[in-house]
Amino acid sequence: MTRPDATPVASHFIDGAYAEDASGTPIPVIYPATGETVATVHAATPEILERALTSAERAQAEWALADPVERGRVLRRAADLIRARNRELSVLETLDTGKPLQETLVADATSGADALEYFGGLAADVTGTSMRFGGDWAYTIRRPLGVCAGIGAWNYPTQIACWKAAPALATGNAMVFKPSETTPLCALKVAEILIEAGLPAGLFNVVQGAGEVGAALTTDPRVAKVSLTGSVPTGRKVAAAAAGGIKHVTMELGGKSPILVFEDADLEDAVSGAINGNFYSSGQVCSNGTRVFVHESLHDAFLDRLRARLGGVVMGDPLDEATNFGPITTAAQANLVMRHIATAEAEGATVAIGGARLDRAGYWIEPTVLTGLSDDMTCVREEIFGPVMSVLTFADEDEAVERANATEFGLSAGLFTSDLARAHRVVAQLRAGTCWINQYNLTPAGMPFGGSRASGIGRENARMAMDHFTEVQTVYVGMGPVESAF
Image 1 (cartoon, helix red, strand yellow):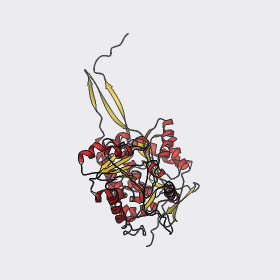
Image 2: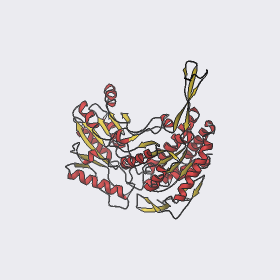
Image 3: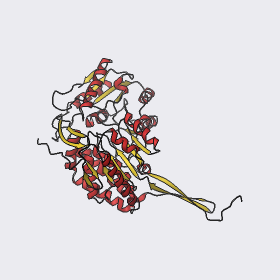
Image 4: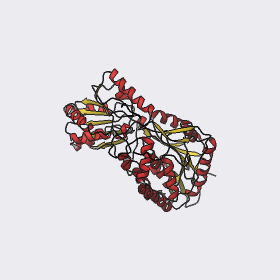
């Protein structure tokens, strides 16, 4: 299949137009399916960053005064444009990430459009409150924070750009967005579409680069908030740097999430949930439920059905819609995943399914299932971020809850059971920010998403995301004479 041209117009998008500074460090864009370089962008220089922040600061002051209804219209028009161009955006996402086109057509640009549409509809409904104190009264106003920095991850570049931009723009902010240096292409198209939809220039700027560019944004005094999607180690660094400037932060980080499969679970649904929670996007999803605790009475049947279902994996050309499983996005990550599998075997785990790296160009690893595990093994404790499922057994509900919570992370959790009383009882005890009952990894725009403990601060999506991009101003109104001691 002929591969489309992925070359962007320029590396950055600033003040309503593409911008280039070839003196920045070259960043090759690698197609994970073959390992070939399909484009090159340049990291932002200090001059590029200055242009981005200056234009954002200027544009935000005017945007904050704009009619919220008009702000919403712009976002909804952008959502319509993204949906109309879903295929070309999905092809670009596949070239950027390696994810199968079968997947990107339904899960990436479309979910970004959902966020723009959702927050576009809420833009006019940012309200305050009023309260009385005798004859006096007070009211609150929700004000935009100003210029916000968005820092994206490499697994969902289009979606993450929209998830961060939509609530920020709806509430009157500007955003300077830095995609992952691994997947730099898609956010440029989001910026281009927002301008076409009527967004004033400067409100959504895209700058490329690695950690040093993210650090420059995080510490710049003009930036009022940092919204990061990334790993826990990166989150710790960014949060610490932002704290030095007393900046607002939203941290959507990684996890080692549990899925509990009780003895009365619908087996087919539980296997489907475990597949979605481990092998969608080749396992490169922060909320994945990679510790699958299966009741001991269901263990053998679960593995048998899982083995049969994984026989349907098609690892072909990601641009072929028949392909349903793609490569790891980077060579470094593929090597890390293989080291984890080797470590698991060295610690006594059994590779029940898969476990091999394919002998072909690109970064291909089979869907892998590990068994014979204990909770102290590395593969059960550490986030792998690849197609590796750890299957463990449990005997009763209390044990399942205790072991599910025995982690520093707290992003997500799921459970499968036909006893809804137990479902709600158990989920109330799980220390995770986002949980699913008899489902896994669905994240509609109207539902808050985010973690607890080491997995993050704040929430993406839903109305509460708008609170994270605004601050409250309180106004006290005196209605009588002012009393004073002298």
